[in-house]
Length: 415
Image (cartoon, rainbow, N blue to C red; front, top):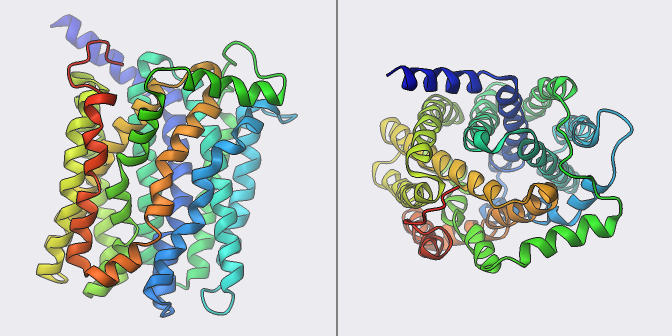
């Protein structure tokens, strides 16, 4: 009993450590910009009566997330003259991100469409660059034994950022113009900048790359020399494809059903927040008990089921209770799945080449959000909302079918 009590005290001490607080805040910084160029922007376009197919295509501004591995070696190779390799880049990127988010608010989906696209692309590029640095920082700063917990707290912070952007942004949009919504969201990035300034710089594992060739070739050579490297990439590409396809069109779906922006924002924020909290606790418990690989199995099935549940709203119409259930279940399962997914990617990353290898893996993770989500508007128009979400649920099958090869249930050397 005393051993278990000591274990609980040690666990609580780790959770309350400065490292975990920084991880949580950095997760928030990563999550906030994402939906500002997706859900919130889609709601703005819907309000301006932009065609549904164009709203679906707007997800293409997320392309930088899928190609961030191309410039990730630059963030490994070159070191800013202040704050160190990780914090120096993070500070510069976050300052630029605040300016870009504010600039998006001064555009318009109708009168300044090209400027809006440019600002959204710039936000996506800066946000993807921020993710490169944050992922590398987290992997280098956390000891291996704290990686699973750190990944869960990062996802928790990430979901808080996305919930603030989507839920809070939509609530504000019912009372303020979208210009002020984006200005408020830009201001929400300021605490993240202060966290960057006061966080410790992680120690460099081994030595930093001294040439650009070393920063590019060595991490790729190490990864692709592993058995099953391509199969793992395919799994990362497909594991969350159904979930991301559905998420790309949920806001237009809710609005089409007749929910107000305040109703959507309130339910997303209230039920989504508690679902994320429960999901973080439950996901952490499962990963401690079952390991990362077995958790991927369970959470993968739950993700697929929660995606199919959106079709229930087609039957019930604008019913708040059903909306609350669907959003809570989706946030719960998707949050757990993402936590296990991120922990899995971190566990297969070589610490010597953190930024480039993790950027490659997470770029593939973002790929479905961009290209697979682009035609979702056309699919929804052609198939109808009910069949659309069934299609998204079935799209999860290929990733689940790869689990026996990539993350066998009975593998003994669990990370």
